[in-house]
Length: 149
Image (cartoon, rainbow, N blue to C red):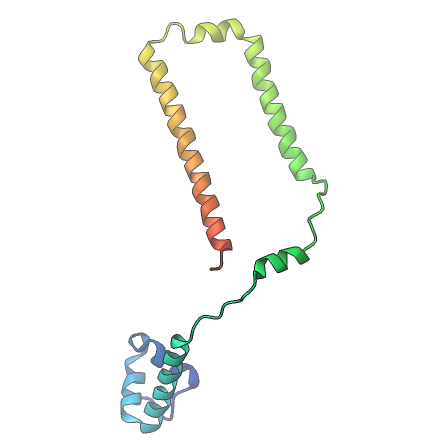
């Protein structure tokens, strides 16, 4: 049992979610008339707040805010330049290797069975599809986070 009266935080917690409060708080509210009355006040307050209509603007707030924002000025970034440089270098190495070893690459799959080639293509396509779906799901999650409504 609690000596003295409860704090406003404890009243609010009990009024909103009584199942989450300690048993000692519930017992105290049952035995103390002052705390019981204060809890009822918070319960009435919370129920009246829930019954109020959600506020809505009669204009497009996002359009007003976006119109006041300055457009982002593109600036040079060494990090992005480095990423593109390595990507270009990787593609160049792969293309150069393909040209250099063209005869070997053309005969690489000629001795393989057809089922092996189909499995290789199927696994590659499935992997690309899963990666694409993962990117799309991450994009949707970010867009949902941005949408406040």
